[in-house]
Amino acid sequence: MKTCGCCGADKSFEEFYRRSAAKDGYQAYCKDCHIARHSEWYKDNKAYHAAYSREAKYGHCINYDALVERYDSVNACECCGIVFGDASSNKKCVDHSGDMIRGIICSSCNIGIGHLKDTYEGVLAALEYLDRVEVKGGQ
Image (tube, rainbow, N blue to C red; front, side, top):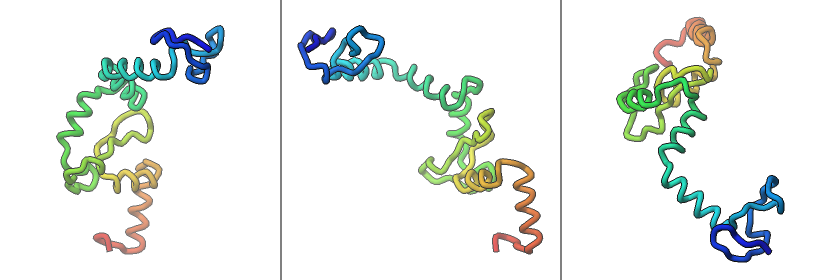
């Protein structure tokens, strides 16, 4: 049995998360109190959590606010020009190299460019292939 440092209740060890740094190998707070405290912290620190998540995803080198403004203002694919519908799920902030946000494009263009290895040479090779087989206008 262990006493929770938060609620003061005596509970079995199964009701505590493990913590290797603790003398007894368990957290000081029971699972219920731990979850409640974490939920409260998250609710009070949403902006911090969002910034931390953005940095993990995009890195600290971009201006996220400018990216959001650009994302919200783009209503057509910057590659093929197709107009986005109401759902923004077809918009992609392209960052395959990990170094920069290149543009906001539709899912089809994002997948196509990705399959061409994100290189000018890949796109050029595809164009040369289409010229060789005389495919014009998507036929």
